[in-house]
Length: 127
Image (cartoon, rainbow, N blue to C red; front, side, top):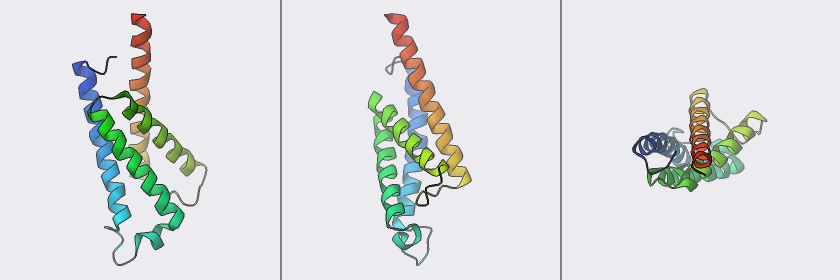
């Protein structure tokens, strides 16, 4: 699948919008929008705050990369989401994800995996 084709472009833009919304949701958590008077650092802990900041920035940069149809956007989104989900599933105490957030991250990971699989398959077909 060529990233320049119309179908791939639409698919990439949809995935980019989902990643952007999830990244902005994480940024809102970092700013303490939903925590009330409590500081986000005390709510999440210093390490949890740092992890959330790294994953938030990676997701926002990946969304921009997907929007401009750069292959590094899909790779960045796939790697950061995989690491975040593995940390959560292995029971890391500083990584907290809601059930809805977990589902969205799984959907993002599967969509990036499908995109990369089709990209490699089409490349091998042209060679």
